[in-house]
Image (cartoon, rainbow, N blue to C red):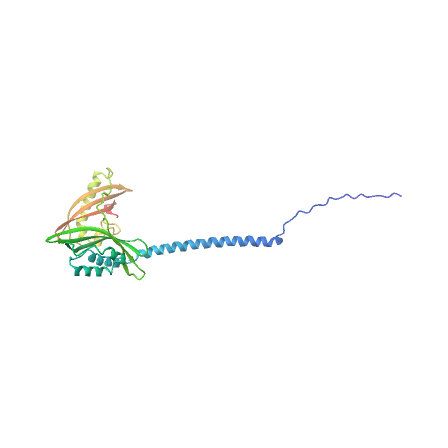
Length: 300
């Protein structure tokens, strides 16, 4: 009897590939989501905070600009009139000192105590005051720049002096004012050496067009002072020049400079008129843009 033995092949056991189960890391996932949401929230907060700060800054600037400087000017004018006027007698000087208490801090009252004495040989009156600037230093303080003309009398001799000064006015939240910096010698703007640039035609507007433009402008400016809106519309596009309803008499096209730009003519001109009421000759300067269609037109 034969016994048949069957050999079973040994199968290699397949190793299981490790896998990550999401369920087992819920805490880590939650932490990552919290971190992400916190970052987004912080970014949004910073953005809105920056906008709010910017808005607040802009609001502060606007508030400084709308402060009524007319009140500061009136306060300053009254002070200047008292400060730069005096008579050489004790009663008048005492009255002046008393009035200045309404404008100066106590420290400045002491500082100016010896400005005018009874032995001074002059009298002074304020002839005129001119303000050149009232500029904010910060929210409550303003620098005032002004000139004052004083008539100075010494014995029988009288002369006028012209001086420039600055001082500082403090304005509190109730708009009450006090001078916190003494009048200090200063300077005022003088004539600038700037010369406006005149467009150079450089031959770009030929002689024929120059002659046509001259003729057109002379015709127009003879009519312009008395012309109504409908009459102006034949010469002017889109109401570039409006009616003035004056009796001015045209005298001449005093000067003219033409240059070409983008198919249009840039005209810088001077027109002389006689004002029959004042009997004076007035010279008006115009910067115009001209263009030719069937006829020349003033575009701007």
